[in-house]
Image 1 (cartoon, rainbow over the protein chains, first blue to last red):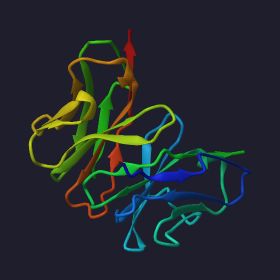
Image 2 (image 1 turned 180 degrees about the vertical axis):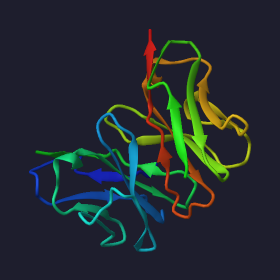
Image 3 (image 1 turned 60 degrees about the vertical axis):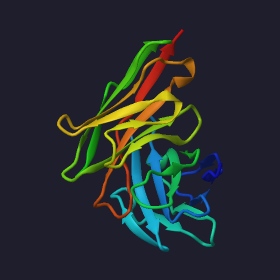
Image 4 (image 1 turned 90 degrees about the vertical axis):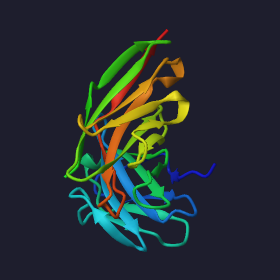
Amino acid sequence: EPEVTQTPSHQVTQMGQEVILRCVPISNHLYFYWYRQILGQKVEFLVSFYNNEISEKSEIFDDQFSVERPDGSNFTLKIRSTKLEDSAMYFCASSERSRTGLCFGAGTRLSVL
Amino acid sequence: AQSVTQLGSHVSVSEGALVLLRCNYSSSVPPYLFWYVQYPNQGLQLLLKYTSAATLVKGINGFEAEFKKSETSFHLTKPSAHMSDAAEYFCAVTTGSSNTGKLIFGQGTTLQVKP
């Protein structure tokens, strides 16, 4: 069964460093998303991406964040200068159409020290 | 704006007992509703979804949920709990007016199943 894959599973970084979280969505999906889950809190929407551009972003997704689909398969989330409060589990998701439900990856745990 | 409230952050049942996880939503337009399950160290897996067809929705692993517009609820049930059902469960909402498919999640309910 096709699945969304995320790498790495765990990323440790120093405050102020740049990180790139990588995702390979399901191949025939057209909508792509990043969510995050701070330990003990809700799963929060960060950004959605469709037709090679951001379609919606949350207040969390400030200028420190960016997304890219550099080729036909990868979808990346970049955090330019990490803060302690960026420590969370980051989930990538994709869907074939909007409103049909999302397929999530296993997540990348980001630890900012 | 849409929102989801899950009543009870922890629910504990005995193996073989009924599972009932509560979800209430708020939406000014007809909602699309979802339940996801998250096993330890894994991503979120879609259990079932309501997209304005039948109000009683059956999902995987014997779970089902009923959409009740009058109660703005979408509670998740399973007649008989199994040890393997122990996980975290998330209710989520989106709407037909959302062209991004963005989901808004509840805070999650941890289901414990006792032998």
